[in-house]
Image 1: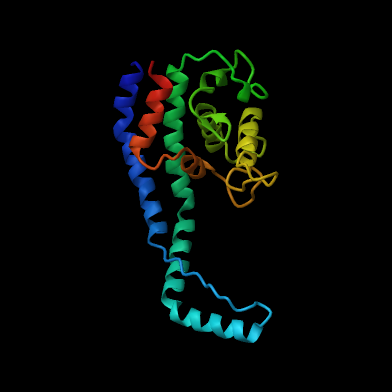
Image 2: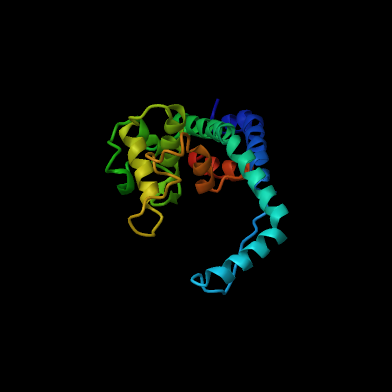
Length: 212
């Protein structure tokens, strides 16, 4: 099987995974987002509370529906992460099987050594300063070993770079911080970062990565 055949033979499975992930996104899209905005100074508590109470009563139905949808989404977050992780698994296998890369770019030189298996993944467009291939590599490892508190050096280094590569100072992005106690699997966040919301998004990147 060559790279083109791999993409073709895995297409149906990957499409099904993206369709499943779309179900969870739909939950969020159906979530109302009522927002209270007021020009009343917060130190005028009586007037502020009166305005907020009025707003709450007028938007009570949307507020309750937002809470319900939020609970539904987060209750299914593990299932969502599992689907997204499976997509990353297929993508990582494609790179491992068909990438011919033998060079370590400067952006990866601090944690990938020449001759390592991960060198194959040091390819593609940059995401937060890293090649998309190494992001897929690390995300796939994190998905497969999410219950291991001691992630591999490369995986930890990639997620550290993603957590700090947002361009807004030293604050770590909790969506990619492996020490975040609220997250076990980061695959959904990775797909969002890669802007893979459809099969076509995925295929565009994979073709660029593994086809000559």
